[in-house]
Image (cartoon, rainbow, N blue to C red; front, side, top):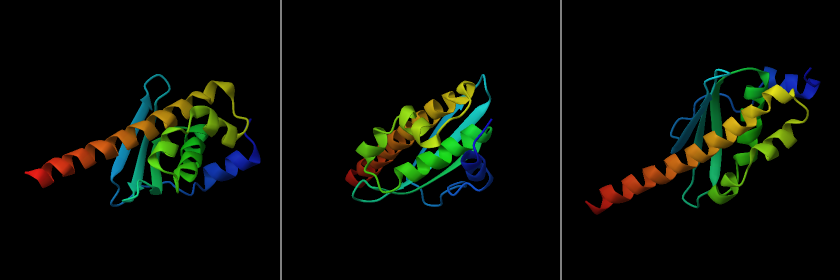
Length: 131
């Protein structure tokens, strides 16, 4: 059902866990399937994603999609991060069951939500600095 590569990544995800000091976080969930993803990003002053972690409730495909997305995001600008699509994530994953491909859409949504959260935080900080 899953390739050895996918199962190995599932058994030892590199980017699982919370990220202390993150300045952008995004959540996505699928009520029907029960998957929940939370993505944490640390974005530096040059708008580069310097670190990324995730917490997820879901199966093999969910965990692997999150782990791959974090790897893809680190070192990218926010604009480059926003351009990562579910198709990019699926391509990196390789073959997975068709009924689990939706998890890549969830990860894409979590990426967008995390970057949006970062911009909202920066806006709040700017308003505080003015007052």
